[in-house]
Length: 114
Image (cartoon, rainbow, N blue to C red; front, side):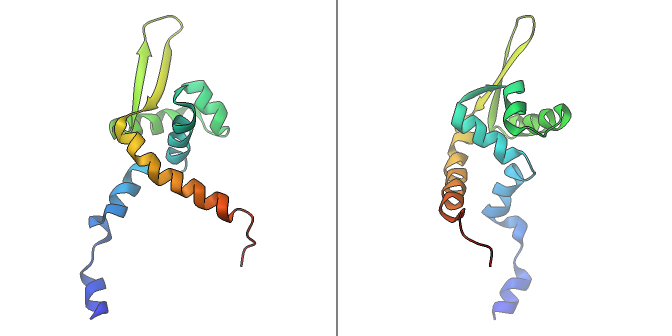
């Protein structure tokens, strides 16, 4: 009976899969976490926070997060150009999930590997 259920199940139809589609990748959760902590952040500040990320990779991740309506990009018409990133309401609603990941990590950080 359980085997039949698993054979007919489709992971891509789950809410878990849907959520992962927005935060998958090496840097998206880090970007979101940074914006949660510091509210409004500029490109170079994000790059310093993440450390080992190229301009291209950071730019691509930011564009994807903006397309998914998780972050807002504010461009100020000045020279040199000023661009700031912040969480949207949709992005803020995802922070409950990321915050739980952080709490779990803090609780289990000192445990030895089995």
